[in-house]
Image (cartoon, rainbow, N blue to C red; front, side, top):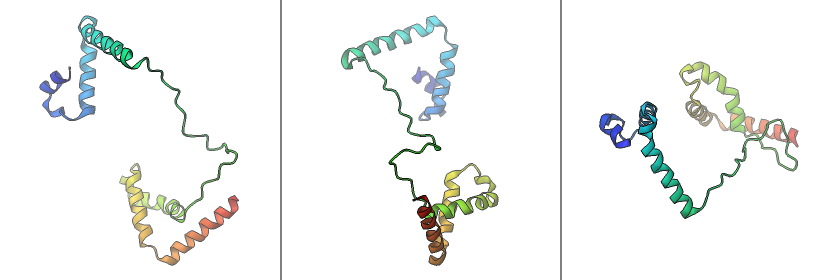
Length: 139
């Protein structure tokens, strides 16, 4: 089906997302009889795969994110860096000055980084002292 879609729409060649949408739309238009050869090919390929590699059993996914309110015993709490504190304090101002970046996290981070690099060592030391104070509070 892919070659047919590319032949009919040469502008989607190499654009996976657009091609997938077109293929999906074409698939929905097919009748059950038209889908049958594709389904038989897929079924045969699956049987061949399982004969070669065995039946694949999906493992349950482990949720890597844990509930933020839940403390894990014995796990060290993450320290807050001076840069992170600085970024938290200027983020709202940067977004208000650049509303076009409101939903563009990477652009905001670039501006925060640029502003951090412009800070004097004395200012950075002040943020480092705040980070140390927070770390001592947590301990």
